[in-house]
Amino acid sequence: MRQPRALVIGAGVGGLTAAAALHRRGWSVTVLERAARLEPVGAGISLAPNSQRALDAIDLGDDVRALAAWQGGGALRTPRGRRLSRMDSAAMAERFGGPLVLLHRATLVDLLVSRLPGGAVRTGTAAALADPGDAGRPARVTTEDGGYEADLVIGADGIDSAVRRGLFPDHPGPRYAGFTTWRLVIPDPGRPFEPHETWGRGRIWGTQPLKDGRVYAYAAAVAEPGGHAPDDERSELLRLYGDWHRPVPDVLAAAAPPDVLRHDIRYLAEPLPAYHRGRVALVGDAAHAMAPTLGQGGNQAIEDAVVLAHHLAPGTGDPSAALAAYTRDRLPRTTDVVRRSARAARAITLTSAPATALRDAAIAVAGRLVPGLALRSFDGIADWHPPTRTYPSGAQRKA
Image (cartoon, rainbow, N blue to C red; front, side, top):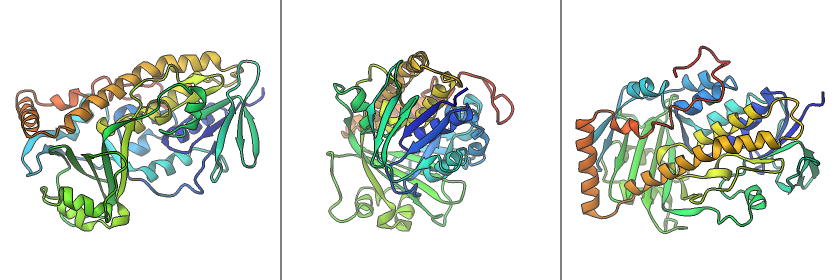
């Protein structure tokens, strides 16, 4: 039987997971990545129990769980340090069947690449979809080195996906969410801290530990799109957050300007009509870019990849039925997560003093009256299981 061939455009989390999952199912997979190399850029990524269970399908879930650094408590705070509500890692694990794991994105990329055969990832290779194909002909992709034909093409080329535009040229594309974000990873700042997220007026900050002793910090603020600091982004963070409670000043003191990444947040407010066309499927931000307020962007990309591979059994000739099943499985769920993330974004982007005070009071009262209420916002998200309950990396996880 001829081995089916898949081309993946983009070597991000979704593309690499899709490649690893298809390789595990017997496909010949090549990943085409525009960047010259897979450099350790980026910052932290949060993997919830839903994506960890998906990663079990490629024998990677336990490797990720072993990197969990958040143990014990945490808090949602005000800029002055007042605790609004408690967060508990054990309660998270008990409710959803696993820990919340924060790790460097480069660490996850390395783990995913380790599940691929040598030479499967071709860097420095910009690729374009030339023909999506159909039941009677293969899909075609072009690069500077020539063209390729494949039984399947996966568009994993991010929020500005050229593959998506080629499949759905009338779709309006991503919309600005109204705020920008900063991310940085620093060495241990030298003093203990409680993991936290802090909400101010139109601004948030989070500080979280990584397993290797480093610290991941992130910030968001209401801003006009396309903005940049007049000097450097670390100086901008000092202006915005320098007088917030510890450890925020300690983190900023330990950061250098090159450590700070800034990105405007955009999302696909209007869902696509489908996540496939012809022999092409979209995964991750190419299909359903979302605000990062629930930390689910990478998680949903991983889910996409594993569900897609689940439907594409070895020996698949015409993948039309499998891709239609993929869309049926993923479009309703990811549309819901996109909308829930957008609602959460509205709560953190309040800028008026009365609205912010009312929000904070409601959070504090709810936390006292209904302990664990914050965790319920992840019901229907973090408790997801992949299509099969047979996990190759160990015992069946908690349902």
